[in-house]
Amino acid sequence: MADRSDPRDQAARLRCWSGPVDPRPVGGGITNANFRVEDSGEAFFVRIGEDIPLHGVMRFNEAAASRAASAAGLSPEVVHQEPGALVLRFVEGQPLEASDLRKPETLERALTLVQRAHAELPRHLHGPTLAFWVFHVLRDYAHTLRSDESPIARELPRLLAAAETLERAVGPVDLVFGHNDLLAANFLDDGKRLWLIDWEYGGWGSPLFDLGGLASNNGLSVDQETWMLEAYFGHCDDGRRRAYAAMKCASLLRETLWSAVSEVHSTLDFDYAGYTAENAARFDAAFSGFRDS
Image (tube, rainbow, N blue to C red; front, side, top):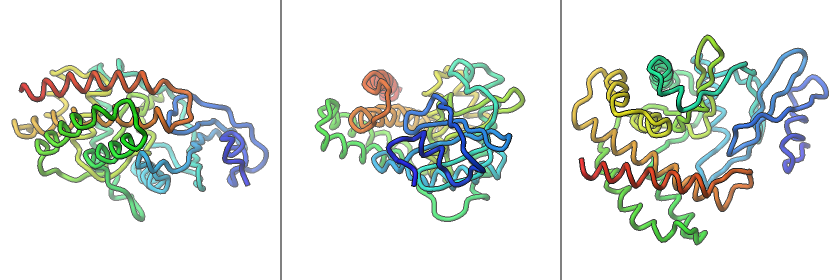
């Protein structure tokens, strides 16, 4: 049995290999450990990570979403899964930077990929899958942060009141299977096309959360947000714009509380405290603008 305390060892001992392999670390993961493995002349990408109930990350759901996204032609092929490990065919490419997504042609390609995910991925899903409702996520994070006596706990009454305001503003939603973590690094460019990767937070929810996250995570301009909404929906009235603005704020608050929980519970080497502070400031600015609009 693989040593679960050593992700590299776990990657090396997976049942899918034809013989001994030498996993090479790949950077970028902040909830899991990633490796490149070559076996029988082929290259594979290995994600090692257990369930993270604190973040709503359940690996059965990630695997189901990854398989469906692969079947839809959106993500690399899943070639193996076992507890704590997911093996995908390796795609030679570069993760995008936020500045890439601010380029009109790249943003258009990325939005097309997201639209396809929302429309096509559900046709390929098998078995039980999770919901992702950001306002439940926020309330759940608040429970954890109070128990942890986190430094941000004293801000929770104010932040949860803001979340209630935002949830009311969102109102009824259309249901899609969203990615729910549209950081630039989760788009991979192989020189010919984009791939959408990392389905840890995939789940049923509102398309507005993905659109809000795409904008807030990558610094889109107001004009780009307007273009994005009109390109996605065809027509976007004032009510939908208001709901979108609320979801964009919620995406920033989710990122803030996600990081605050990770400050206490994650063992990965990442500056969570700095990330919490950065996103808290961005949320406050966005929510202030939302209230004043």
